[in-house]
Length: 567
Image 1 (cartoon, one colour):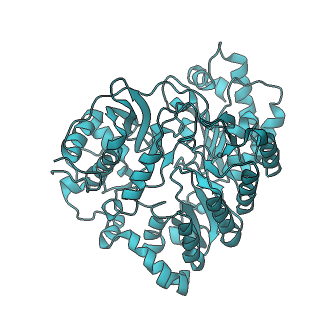
Image 2 (cartoon, helix red, strand yellow):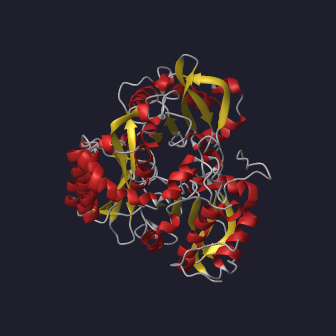
Image 3 (cartoon, helix red, strand yellow):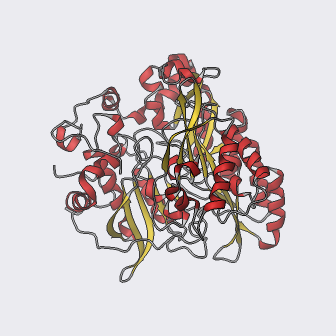
């Protein structure tokens, strides 16, 4: 039966390894809905989104001590709220203490942006929330959203009121839900885009975000949509991605990718080989999300991502189930995206379709503040702009700039610490939240990244890199900073009695203008301490420059080089 986009899709009945054959996997469509772990139990008791009313009516009035554990460490995530790490807890306790022992009385809060281009009223609201309620924090994450810290439960209803007054929300920013979408930050304005994904993103989020049909998934479900030739949304590491292509007969639409994800068991997404017409995109997205809901593995949370199901089924079966059980028709075959063209981070000055400019700036590893956001809004307005956007690379863009005011804008942003002409390492370094706020982390990341960038800018000022070498720093094994797809990826861990980074070298995606995406190479036995990090990056960078062949990239060199050259 052909489903309309507004109906609920329901079925008729690398390194990622699926569960063994014959074992119950907690698949609703196969094993029934009996909960097999505590997470599934509390999700089955009520729609987790119902916790919102308790936050407004009870917890914000009675304080954090009134919140039961399943709400505090469970359902709150559905509203974009996590307890943050209590200050002063030694990193050696990270894996020994439970969430309650590690948690402070304050929260991290994520705001859904879904790739939209924010008007200046929205930017100022985001900035003032940071100033008024978050000790002036406001970081840009690599999921293209804003992340606050030091949020008190008493302030959450007022924060929601302010966000919702300008069309923003924290609904399903976290939790076992369709989390915030990645979308091309230059959608609709770039002179060279294949298709504008804005109507598709808007239609999916308006229809499905907050809908109880998809508020109880096995785990998180990540979406990316782009129509830009730079492939600017890291589509290979999302659960579902729609990538702009031109069909020789059907015109512009999307190529469908499924099953990507990193963390401790990384797997790159695969093409299903189908062409998705723009008018079918909502229905196809809901079909893939429905497959995850109904066939995803719920028994073990370590196996509860879509990538594990794809590893068992393969793309051919996945396509067949999507067509037969969720769409009721076949999708046409379609072309793969062309090789990436241009820079996916959009740093610098670029032409828009309308003759105006957009300018990309590099905050240091995404670290902003409420005060800086307010300053950005003022500078954008003075430059004739009414919009900004964030990128999946922890960058921000000012759109619709009057060409005559570009230089004035660039100079003003420099005074805020944001540059449109960053050094290669300032441009290409990313870092997760780290031990400063995260309960899972073993090491500090943001401050270390800033210090390392400063050191490298001095030490390597004499070299001319063909392309920036990406340096991604993660505080734990979960790869929020995408360590396996960086030129140099660093995974924080406890090594004996000291904290050090495991090193991954030579990862990258199609957006890095590689022939094909690939995961980084782990250098056996190599551990780098925080103190030694600038020395190591300088050493391996100079080793690459001294021994690479022709136009060989760092990633290509890292995969063929002898291990001694990588140490």
